[in-house]
Amino acid sequence: MTGMDLGRFGIWRHGGSIGPDLARGVERLGYGTIWLGGSPSGDLADAEGVLAATDHVVVGTGIVNMWATSAEEVAASYHRLEDAYPGRFLLGVGIGHPEATKEYRSPYATIVDYLDKLDAAEVPEERRVLAALGPKVLRLSTERAAGAHPYLVPPEHTRQARETLGDGPLLAPEQKVVVDTDADRARELGRKNVANPYLKLVNYTGNLKRLGWSERDIADGGSDALVDVLALHGDAATIAAGLTAHLDAGADHVAVQALTRRGEDPLPALRAVAETLKLA
Image: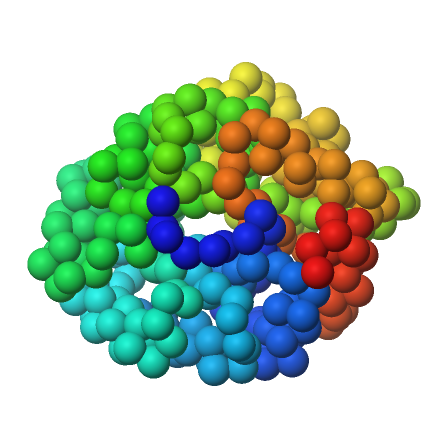
Protein backbone atom coordinates (compact mmCIF):
# COMPACT_ATOMS: atom_id res chain seq x y z
CA MET A 1 0.00 0.00 0.00
CA THR A 2 0.98 3.62 -0.44
CA GLY A 3 0.68 4.85 3.13
CA MET A 4 -1.41 7.68 1.65
CA ASP A 5 -5.12 8.29 2.16
CA LEU A 6 -6.53 8.06 -1.36
CA GLY A 7 -10.09 7.86 -0.12
CA ARG A 8 -12.55 5.25 -1.35
CA PHE A 9 -13.25 7.26 -4.49
CA GLY A 10 -11.35 9.67 -6.68
CA ILE A 11 -11.82 11.14 -10.12
CA TRP A 12 -9.98 10.45 -13.38
CA ARG A 13 -9.64 13.05 -16.13
CA HIS A 14 -7.16 13.93 -18.83
CA GLY A 15 -4.52 16.06 -17.17
CA GLY A 16 -4.93 19.13 -19.34
CA SER A 17 -8.66 19.30 -18.60
CA ILE A 18 -8.37 19.87 -14.86
CA GLY A 19 -8.09 23.57 -14.08
CA PRO A 20 -7.86 25.10 -10.60
CA ASP A 21 -11.62 25.61 -10.20
CA LEU A 22 -12.46 22.01 -11.12
CA ALA A 23 -9.69 20.69 -8.87
CA ARG A 24 -10.95 22.71 -5.90
CA GLY A 25 -14.53 21.68 -6.61
CA VAL A 26 -13.59 17.98 -6.67
CA GLU A 27 -11.72 18.36 -3.38
CA ARG A 28 -14.71 20.06 -1.72
CA LEU A 29 -16.99 17.23 -2.86
CA GLY A 30 -14.92 14.76 -0.84
CA TYR A 31 -13.11 12.80 -3.55
CA GLY A 32 -9.78 11.69 -2.17
CA THR A 33 -7.63 11.56 -5.29
CA ILE A 34 -7.44 13.30 -8.65
CA TRP A 35 -5.94 11.02 -11.31
CA LEU A 36 -4.40 12.75 -14.31
CA GLY A 37 -4.74 10.62 -17.43
CA GLY A 38 -3.73 10.92 -21.05
CA SER A 39 -0.01 10.18 -20.62
CA PRO A 40 1.01 13.29 -18.65
CA SER A 41 4.35 14.79 -19.61
CA GLY A 42 7.43 13.95 -17.61
CA ASP A 43 7.73 17.40 -16.09
CA LEU A 44 4.45 16.67 -14.24
CA ALA A 45 3.42 20.29 -14.71
CA ASP A 46 -0.29 19.38 -14.75
CA ALA A 47 0.06 17.56 -11.45
CA GLU A 48 1.93 20.50 -9.96
CA GLY A 49 -0.88 22.84 -11.01
CA VAL A 50 -3.53 20.69 -9.35
CA LEU A 51 -1.47 20.34 -6.19
CA ALA A 52 -0.97 24.09 -6.02
CA ALA A 53 -4.70 24.74 -6.43
CA THR A 54 -5.80 22.36 -3.67
CA ASP A 55 -5.17 21.79 0.02
CA HIS A 56 -5.13 18.07 0.74
CA VAL A 57 -6.38 15.93 -2.17
CA VAL A 58 -3.89 13.34 -3.44
CA VAL A 59 -2.83 13.73 -7.07
CA GLY A 60 -1.84 10.66 -9.10
CA THR A 61 -0.81 10.03 -12.68
CA GLY A 62 -2.85 7.52 -14.63
CA ILE A 63 -0.36 7.02 -16.24
CA VAL A 64 3.06 8.36 -17.25
CA ASN A 65 3.96 6.38 -20.38
CA MET A 66 7.30 4.59 -20.03
CA TRP A 67 7.96 4.87 -23.76
CA ALA A 68 7.39 8.62 -23.84
CA THR A 69 9.15 9.72 -20.65
CA SER A 70 12.45 8.56 -19.23
CA ALA A 71 12.56 7.24 -15.70
CA GLU A 72 15.23 9.79 -14.85
CA GLU A 73 13.04 12.70 -15.97
CA VAL A 74 9.93 11.59 -14.12
CA ALA A 75 11.96 10.74 -11.00
CA ALA A 76 13.34 14.28 -10.87
CA SER A 77 9.79 15.63 -11.23
CA TYR A 78 8.54 13.27 -8.52
CA HIS A 79 11.13 14.58 -6.07
CA ARG A 80 10.27 18.18 -6.95
CA LEU A 81 6.62 17.58 -6.15
CA GLU A 82 7.37 15.57 -3.03
CA ASP A 83 9.55 18.38 -1.70
CA ALA A 84 6.88 21.01 -2.39
CA TYR A 85 3.79 18.95 -1.48
CA PRO A 86 4.96 16.13 0.79
CA GLY A 87 2.77 13.06 0.90
CA ARG A 88 0.32 14.20 -1.78
CA PHE A 89 1.65 12.82 -5.06
CA LEU A 90 1.40 9.23 -6.31
CA LEU A 91 3.33 8.26 -9.43
CA GLY A 92 1.42 5.97 -11.77
CA VAL A 93 3.50 4.53 -14.63
CA GLY A 94 2.77 2.07 -17.39
CA ILE A 95 3.77 0.63 -20.71
CA GLY A 96 0.98 2.08 -22.85
CA HIS A 97 -0.07 0.06 -25.89
CA PRO A 98 1.74 -1.13 -29.00
CA GLU A 99 -0.43 0.70 -31.53
CA ALA A 100 0.77 4.06 -30.20
CA THR A 101 4.49 3.37 -30.02
CA LYS A 102 6.78 2.46 -32.90
CA GLU A 103 9.46 1.27 -30.49
CA TYR A 104 7.10 -0.97 -28.50
CA ARG A 105 9.04 -4.16 -27.80
CA SER A 106 9.81 -6.47 -24.87
CA PRO A 107 7.19 -4.71 -22.74
CA TYR A 108 7.74 -6.70 -19.55
CA ALA A 109 11.50 -6.26 -19.67
CA THR A 110 10.99 -2.55 -20.32
CA ILE A 111 8.78 -2.22 -17.25
CA VAL A 112 11.35 -3.98 -15.07
CA ASP A 113 14.17 -1.82 -16.41
CA TYR A 114 12.12 1.33 -15.84
CA LEU A 115 11.38 0.33 -12.25
CA ASP A 116 15.07 -0.41 -11.71
CA LYS A 117 15.85 3.14 -12.81
CA LEU A 118 13.18 4.56 -10.49
CA ASP A 119 14.80 2.58 -7.68
CA ALA A 120 18.18 4.06 -8.55
CA ALA A 121 16.63 7.54 -8.48
CA GLU A 122 15.14 6.82 -5.05
CA VAL A 123 11.47 6.92 -5.98
CA PRO A 124 9.97 4.74 -3.22
CA GLU A 125 8.03 1.63 -4.21
CA GLU A 126 5.21 2.63 -1.88
CA ARG A 127 4.72 5.88 -3.79
CA ARG A 128 4.26 4.39 -7.24
CA VAL A 129 1.65 2.19 -8.91
CA LEU A 130 1.60 0.26 -12.17
CA ALA A 131 -0.98 0.23 -14.92
CA ALA A 132 -1.75 -3.48 -14.92
CA LEU A 133 -4.34 -5.66 -16.62
CA GLY A 134 -2.91 -9.18 -17.00
CA PRO A 135 -1.69 -11.47 -14.23
CA LYS A 136 2.02 -11.04 -14.94
CA VAL A 137 2.10 -7.27 -14.55
CA LEU A 138 -0.40 -7.43 -11.70
CA ARG A 139 2.02 -9.67 -9.83
CA LEU A 140 4.87 -7.29 -10.66
CA SER A 141 2.85 -4.43 -9.17
CA THR A 142 2.92 -6.24 -5.82
CA GLU A 143 6.67 -6.87 -6.00
CA ARG A 144 7.92 -3.54 -7.31
CA ALA A 145 5.20 -0.99 -6.50
CA ALA A 146 2.41 -0.21 -4.06
CA GLY A 147 -0.12 -1.91 -6.29
CA ALA A 148 -2.11 -1.56 -9.50
CA HIS A 149 -4.18 1.05 -11.32
CA PRO A 150 -6.13 -0.87 -14.00
CA TYR A 151 -8.01 1.07 -16.69
CA LEU A 152 -11.21 0.15 -18.57
CA VAL A 153 -12.15 -2.74 -16.33
CA PRO A 154 -15.44 -4.08 -14.95
CA PRO A 155 -15.86 -5.38 -11.38
CA GLU A 156 -15.15 -8.94 -12.56
CA HIS A 157 -11.62 -7.88 -13.46
CA THR A 158 -11.32 -6.25 -10.04
CA ARG A 159 -12.31 -9.54 -8.39
CA GLN A 160 -9.75 -11.51 -10.38
CA ALA A 161 -7.08 -8.86 -9.87
CA ARG A 162 -7.56 -8.97 -6.10
CA GLU A 163 -7.11 -12.73 -6.19
CA THR A 164 -3.83 -12.22 -8.06
CA LEU A 165 -2.61 -9.38 -5.84
CA GLY A 166 -3.60 -10.97 -2.55
CA ASP A 167 -4.29 -8.89 0.53
CA GLY A 168 -2.37 -5.68 1.04
CA PRO A 169 -1.37 -4.18 -2.32
CA LEU A 170 -3.40 -1.22 -3.57
CA LEU A 171 -6.02 -1.95 -6.22
CA ALA A 172 -7.42 1.25 -7.75
CA PRO A 173 -9.42 0.63 -10.95
CA GLU A 174 -10.84 3.33 -13.21
CA GLN A 175 -14.56 3.29 -14.01
CA LYS A 176 -16.37 5.42 -16.61
CA VAL A 177 -19.83 6.72 -15.73
CA VAL A 178 -22.59 8.67 -17.47
CA VAL A 179 -25.05 10.28 -15.07
CA ASP A 180 -28.09 10.25 -17.33
CA THR A 181 -31.35 8.29 -17.06
CA ASP A 182 -31.95 8.34 -20.81
CA ALA A 183 -30.42 4.97 -21.68
CA ASP A 184 -30.03 5.57 -25.41
CA ARG A 185 -28.41 8.96 -24.96
CA ALA A 186 -26.15 7.74 -22.16
CA ARG A 187 -25.11 4.64 -24.08
CA GLU A 188 -24.27 6.74 -27.14
CA LEU A 189 -21.89 8.85 -25.08
CA GLY A 190 -20.47 5.79 -23.36
CA ARG A 191 -19.85 3.98 -26.64
CA LYS A 192 -18.13 7.04 -28.10
CA ASN A 193 -15.67 7.06 -25.21
CA VAL A 194 -15.15 3.29 -25.07
CA ALA A 195 -15.00 2.31 -28.75
CA ASN A 196 -12.39 4.78 -29.91
CA PRO A 197 -9.64 4.04 -29.22
CA TYR A 198 -9.93 1.37 -26.54
CA LEU A 199 -11.81 -1.34 -28.41
CA LYS A 200 -9.18 -1.08 -31.15
CA LEU A 201 -6.21 -1.66 -28.80
CA VAL A 202 -5.00 -5.20 -28.21
CA ASN A 203 -4.09 -4.83 -24.55
CA TYR A 204 -7.66 -3.81 -23.70
CA THR A 205 -9.42 -6.20 -26.08
CA GLY A 206 -7.19 -9.05 -24.92
CA ASN A 207 -8.10 -8.31 -21.34
CA LEU A 208 -11.81 -8.25 -22.14
CA LYS A 209 -11.52 -11.59 -23.90
CA ARG A 210 -9.81 -13.06 -20.83
CA LEU A 211 -12.89 -11.96 -18.89
CA GLY A 212 -15.16 -13.86 -21.29
CA TRP A 213 -16.31 -11.14 -23.68
CA SER A 214 -16.52 -12.31 -27.28
CA GLU A 215 -15.28 -10.87 -30.56
CA ARG A 216 -18.90 -10.03 -31.32
CA ASP A 217 -19.15 -8.02 -28.09
CA ILE A 218 -16.02 -6.06 -28.99
CA ALA A 219 -16.78 -5.48 -32.69
CA ASP A 220 -18.59 -2.49 -34.19
CA GLY A 221 -18.14 -0.16 -31.24
CA GLY A 222 -19.03 -2.73 -28.61
CA SER A 223 -22.23 -4.54 -27.73
CA ASP A 224 -24.74 -2.74 -25.54
CA ALA A 225 -23.93 -5.14 -22.72
CA LEU A 226 -20.20 -4.42 -22.91
CA VAL A 227 -20.64 -0.65 -23.20
CA ASP A 228 -23.04 -0.65 -20.24
CA VAL A 229 -20.44 -2.39 -18.05
CA LEU A 230 -17.49 -0.24 -19.13
CA ALA A 231 -19.45 3.04 -19.01
CA LEU A 232 -22.06 2.77 -16.29
CA HIS A 233 -25.14 4.89 -16.84
CA GLY A 234 -28.25 5.84 -14.91
CA ASP A 235 -29.18 8.05 -12.00
CA ALA A 236 -26.71 8.81 -9.23
CA ALA A 237 -27.92 5.91 -7.09
CA THR A 238 -27.40 3.43 -9.94
CA ILE A 239 -23.94 4.83 -10.60
CA ALA A 240 -23.04 4.68 -6.90
CA ALA A 241 -24.09 1.03 -6.73
CA GLY A 242 -21.96 0.20 -9.77
CA LEU A 243 -18.93 1.94 -8.28
CA THR A 244 -19.42 0.21 -4.95
CA ALA A 245 -19.42 -3.11 -6.82
CA HIS A 246 -15.69 -2.58 -7.41
CA LEU A 247 -15.13 -2.15 -3.67
CA ASP A 248 -17.17 -5.27 -3.00
CA ALA A 249 -14.99 -7.11 -5.53
CA GLY A 250 -11.80 -6.15 -3.72
CA ALA A 251 -10.82 -2.64 -4.82
CA ASP A 252 -9.42 -0.22 -2.26
CA HIS A 253 -10.24 2.85 -4.32
CA VAL A 254 -12.18 3.61 -7.52
CA ALA A 255 -11.20 6.38 -9.95
CA VAL A 256 -14.45 7.76 -11.37
CA GLN A 257 -14.30 9.11 -14.92
CA ALA A 258 -17.49 11.13 -15.43
CA LEU A 259 -18.14 11.27 -19.16
CA THR A 260 -19.62 14.50 -20.44
CA ARG A 261 -20.21 16.11 -23.79
CA ARG A 262 -17.65 18.53 -25.13
CA GLY A 263 -17.61 21.73 -23.10
CA GLU A 264 -19.95 20.39 -20.41
CA ASP A 265 -18.97 20.96 -16.77
CA PRO A 266 -18.42 17.56 -15.08
CA LEU A 267 -18.96 18.92 -11.56
CA PRO A 268 -22.77 18.49 -11.47
CA ALA A 269 -22.45 14.78 -12.31
CA LEU A 270 -19.58 14.33 -9.86
CA ARG A 271 -21.57 16.20 -7.20
CA ALA A 272 -24.62 13.97 -7.64
CA VAL A 273 -22.48 10.84 -7.29
CA ALA A 274 -20.52 12.23 -4.32
CA GLU A 275 -23.72 13.14 -2.47
CA THR A 276 -25.17 9.69 -3.06
CA LEU A 277 -21.96 8.08 -1.82
CA LYS A 278 -21.88 10.51 1.12
CA LEU A 279 -18.25 11.45 0.49
CA ALA A 280 -18.21 14.84 2.19
